Length: 136
Picture 1: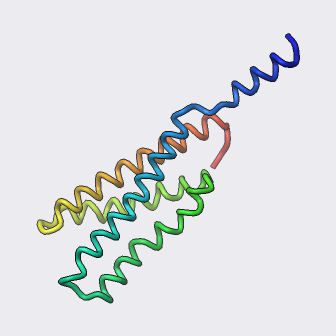
Picture 2: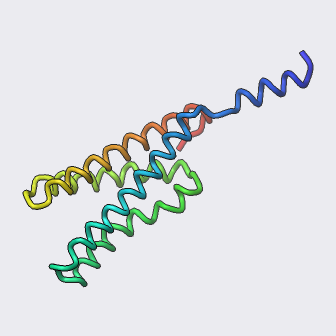
């Protein structure tokens, strides 16, 4: 074997599987869809509600999630891992919202979004760690 063929084999081995990039895209898309859904629902409640209280609740929902945005953009594996834990807290709240008659559809939609986000996070973390052989 020549050195050229050896380097070609090594570079082919370093190509990450497509599932890593696909799951990362799913995480980012679902994450920002979740943020948009919280914002749209908050704006939908404004005409009949107390604006300062709704603004405070919106900030309370958004700030913990927005903390993760820079790490997602920079593809820090630890950010993805911590987000998977935080998503579970939001999931519990969304299930409770789904059991209230007036907010049932919203709660179901948020629960589905959070489920997809959690699954995409798990797939990304697992495949990233297996391919790059890196700890969290």
